Amino acid sequence: MTAANSANRREPAVHRDPTIHLFAVGQVVRLRGGYGVFTSRVGDIYRITATLPPSGNALQYRIRNEREQYERVAPEDSLEAMRAAEPGEGDALMDRTFSR
Image (tube, rainbow, N blue to C red; front, side):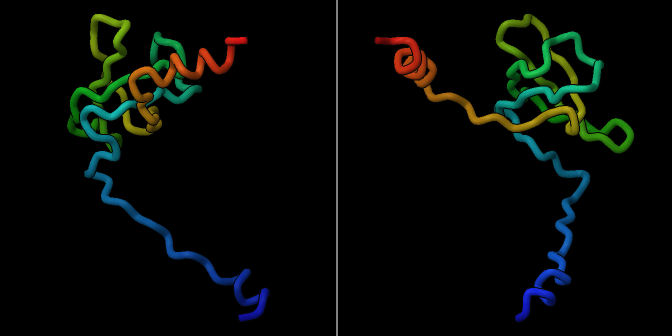
């Protein structure tokens, strides 16, 4: 295949079922910026506590930050997945970063 042919070839679009939640209960997520809807700081870490029915075209989740005493409802497009740190992983990073 020539370079011109490969440049014109397009990958098929991936379509996902809009009624299936992208995130699972227990998954760690972070709020994306730029919405102005939430009173928390953008980037705060939350855990999915429940999946909720859609509101309009947006799937929703119940989320909770361990520092807060309440849960929030967030649309799927305002969340992004995070990798949960293993127990003690943050401590080791602190030691490597700030120890002599």
